[in-house]
Image 1 (tube, rainbow, N blue to C red):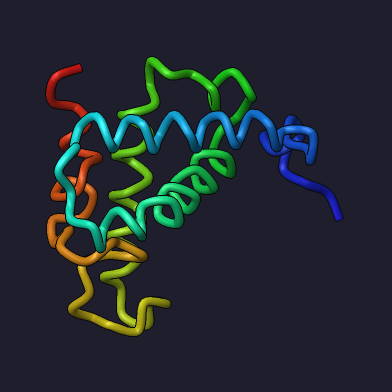
Image 2: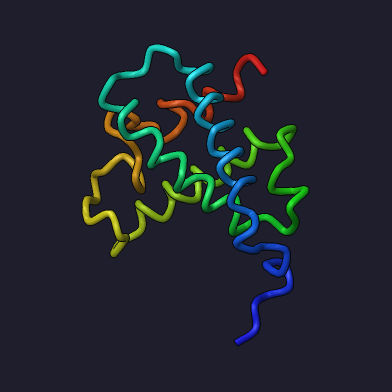
Length: 123
């Protein structure tokens, strides 16, 4: 079983980097949306882990993965893909009217309502 060439940079040794990026993403959300609902705050770490995992899987290199200058754009792209996937018939969400794959309640506009599109404002 061969891994695609763009995945060859990934390894279990990336764990500290991944934790670092997760922390950075959480801080980014908290800066952009300091007054988010408590219910959403509880779900934020799990939501961010899913976003980070998608970033990690799609990056072609560790440099691309860790590039903070493109982070917000990449987060928006990943969130849009998650939303598109959740709207497809037979999606894993099981709730066709849900606001997105793993989207916290109250984020009916996907990440834009909770932060990702809101992330672009002000930076």
